[in-house]
Amino acid sequence: MYKYHYETGGFVSAGSEAVFDELDQHERLSAHMMQSSQMMAGGAMALKLDHGKGRRIGSLMSLQGQVLGVPIGVEQMVIDHTPPQQKIWETVGEPRLLVIGRYTMGFTVVPRPGGSMLTVFFDYDLPTGGWKIVGLLLGRFYARWCATNIVSGIVNRFV
Image 1 (cartoon, rainbow, N blue to C red):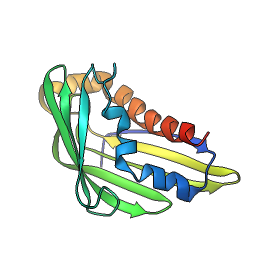
Image 2: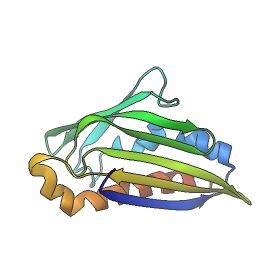
Image 3: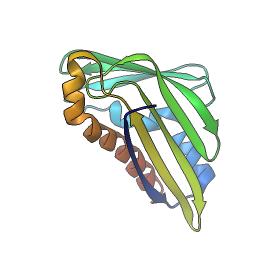
């Protein structure tokens, strides 16, 4: 469905239920987007959750902000919520992003002796219009940054 794919993973020193519960809080998943950073060119995004708080199928989550003075935003909907194994969400409509376009993102948690194996994936298309060139140059870098931040954040949380 999407042209580009990135995934990464890591071992987490916690049971699958605890890992899933931490990741099922979308504000933790999006924390790297809500802080000013070099990758966000000094910008940051604000997260808005519906009454489902991103914790059930059909729940809506949106991120809005600015990068280099350009308004950006995306609305996402949870399409799979299978505690404590998997959660998947995808864009709704056409996102206003600079380096990626529509996407599906998610994670799986598999129990292992002494903890869990976490895998985060990012399937995406390039942005539309004039931003497509930027997406070709930076899309994979962004996907890696986003997925890696999620994995390292949860790994470090349970150290």
